[in-house]
Length: 332
Image (cartoon, rainbow, N blue to C red; front, top):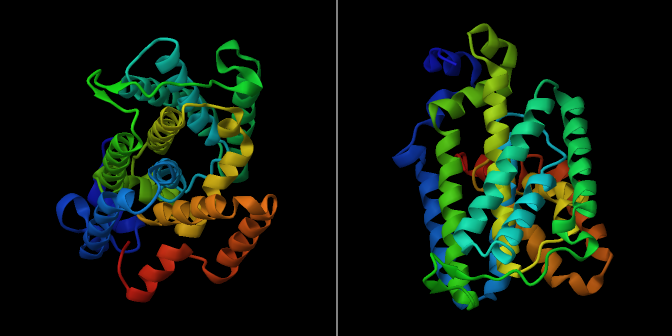
């Protein structure tokens, strides 16, 4: 993996100078957006229902993990629900049956998703385009049918009554407000980690692979290794989101490993803005809010989601955040 990062960046990226920023690679616009995000996280639980906010943050983290793979490496996975769902199942099992504290249960879920991502990535990474997407979908369906049959998952009933427990065995998480601060901390920490990854030398190589993989290969980069590591990181963070969700709601079900969940995260990322840092967060907020407040409309929610998706594809090709960034000529 050793090569001159500067040379590949200069030759394969449109404008590497735009990647420069302040602390951790944040541009001024991104620092401003980060400030707004932090203020929102601090104020929101006093204005909105904490459980709704926790659901939003879990799906926002899931979308950010997915965006790391498709937005910065150019790999479209149709099977990310497998890592999200298995992270939830293992975290729930660890908390309920093994009696682990919530932070350890979430780590178990994340590690499980990472190991699963390692296997799936090793198999799928050798293919590109639609073949890669179909392989990830097939592997995710295998995980789904495993979850239907495995005794520890509870089948169609799922794992219920998962205890929230006490953080580090000291701080009880029974209260929604207390649990919210843990979820907000996990989300913010993982969000900053993703931002750091994509603005590191490793991230620059990922972008160059996305832009021109043959060029990256010709310069001596083992592109499959870079893509596999990105796949594992994305799966691990997705598993963290799923594990956190199962602890928050006290249940892990087949819904989280179903192929439709993979479709939802694609929709969130495209609506918010593919390849933008803050886009998946906004996309997740739009979709989760719509599902929550339009739930009484039943199946019509799916129709509305379809209309939004078609509208974004036709009118907002860059997504909501992407269009705003292009209009303001800033990087978000």
